[in-house]
Length: 178
Image 1 (cartoon, rainbow, N blue to C red):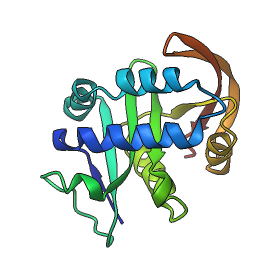
Image 2: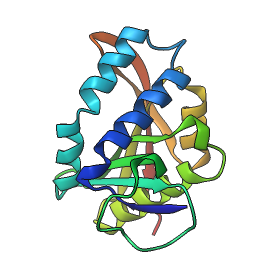
Image 3: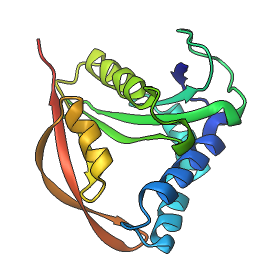
Image 4: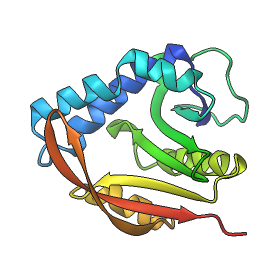
């Protein structure tokens, strides 16, 4: 598998992976309307394009296939993109945030999520943050376990709005060890 920086051409693949993941992972958590509205808003092509172009955002995609270390200059075939991770640097707070990380349901179990999180984590720490925050819907047991298994510690709870409906989420923090 290859993990590389996303390009503007990857926007449709990111949206497809998010939609398929939400449909698979959240049927008992989110209403269908909320899920559709959330994907529409959060993965709008203009928002994805903005994340690709922003200096303080890191958007990576995982491609199916052989492992390489090069960052591709051009988008690969969108059907080959099977996961993505989105991180943000908050320079004023010395913190980074993992906003989203999804692997397509048909491509799970091969370490892609772990590799995506490692890449975002390493790059956020390389940019000088001393801690990384992540949030997961409280009822998303696999997502919560994923972050805990990676060393993130539960630091509280919050609420997010998706499609006009409020949902509880769990906050996690990973601190840089020096």
